[in-house]
Amino acid sequence: MTYAPSDEVRLLAALAQCEMALVRRDPVAAALLAQAARHAEGLPAGELVATASALVRAAGVHGDEPAERAARKVAQALCRTALQTSEAALVGAASETSG
Amino acid sequence: MSRRGERVWGEDAAVLAAAGLDVAALGRLEQAVMADARPPAGVAVHDAHVHLGRDADGHQLAAGDLVADLDRHGVARAVCFPANEPGSDGQFSLANYEVARAGREHPDRIVPFCRVDPRTPGAEAAMERAAGEGARGLKLHPVAQRFRPEDPAVIVLVRRAAERGWPVLIHAGFGARPLARPLATLADAAPDATLILAHAGRGDARALRAALDGRPGIYYDTSLATVTDLVQTDPGRLLFGSDRPYGEHASAMHLVACAGWAAGWAPAQVAAVLGGNLCALLGDDA
Image: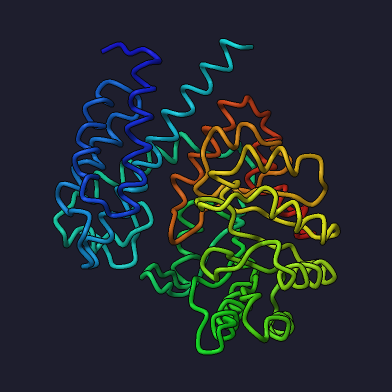
């Protein structure tokens, strides 16, 4: 699957929402991550986002049991890493264009 | 089967496995990210931002677990300070003691900083006590302890830290209140201080650069920062940080690798961000 910078922009915007929703334990995080996972299909961050989405589906965002907390933290880390991947691709591309 | 104490993405692998999660797959993904983020050969990684103890919000990290994390990710050592556990005196005395003790138990791996609350009586005495216990710097958290960075009580503490030759790491970012002018006021009032602005000032980074660029003694740690903010910052002013246990090392190292790639940093600049800048600031060899 090929992708364009605009696909990265869409994913970056979605992941930024996911990151804060996860930190705030907002129930919308699961839906946002599921959407982001679809946006990420075929992109470099695809596996990270799909895994984060699956984790949140399995563990939810509200629970305080150790396993739920741990799964949520891993989902946050995956989401952060995906965001970095996407942002770097865009910043790097912008530098090449302007440079 | 995961042994208790093994960690994946910063979390206990046994706990994740008990929840039915595929820990092996999570581990492979983490290893793949770490492979992409591997530092240049021979570069020592030093972490400027780690909390030890147990935060009121449930995050916790013990010294032994941190050292295992450092080993796993090839991090030489970490600057550590208490989580948000001010204790009965409100001055983090017990937490500071524990961090200093961890520093004595792991002198090559843990650099202890103390944490105090400038707006609660006894802050200077708490710093003095922490210095006697081995602290080498000061951590301040304006959001958790509900003070303003430009408060006169903060200025006094930062000046005291500067007199000791201590760096001061200040939580900077993620807040509603603008930070650039307050931090510029603090920097003006304590011109000899070394200020490390955590999270690279996320949320205020652009205004902070405009207000503080060119001033000596201003540094930014990379913990939980954004790629764009790091790319727009002089790498000579950046200090690698993980913010364990709120953050973790794989994504923290990946962030620096991404920023370095996007900004076109030379290997020497990457090395400086990952450890050289912090070692120079602490007066140690990298």
